[in-house]
Image (cartoon, rainbow, N blue to C red):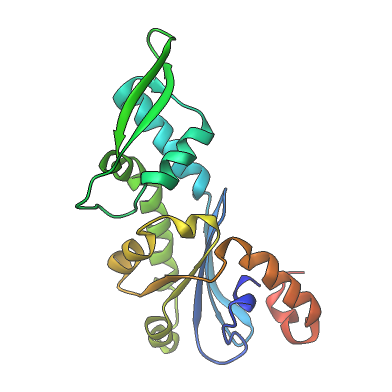
Length: 200
């Protein structure tokens, strides 16, 4: 249903690929003729990226930070691809050894390194989905690209990373955080048309 809001021609005999990355899971699907051709899900998305940042900061800097701080780091200086222009951010937390308040300067390159593992799992899931796409739909996917939705889709450079790793263009949907909700609304209003796309 998330693809409905983005006006993808899901009822036509062509393939459309969607990657939804919410807070707790990432889901990829290829849709054609109003139905799901292939689908995969992995419990890795924004929360796991934040968790990886927290673990990295504790391991490298002996600094304990909360989920909100990790998310702020991701938003402010996080990038899914290595950047030639390094940014830094002052991060405050608790020293894991002394238990006292502590501040460190964290670089964007460090954040990039911290996020590699969870993002790699999302990429691997995408590749698995692509391997299961029928040959007659593969050219459609390459031509149309991958539509990215969900809050994690807004991570800087993630569209470029997916394009580099899969060879398929990826782009962020308009208003990615609300695509699923809007798509469900459209589906409910048009149940006779989209009933095949809705899990009962």
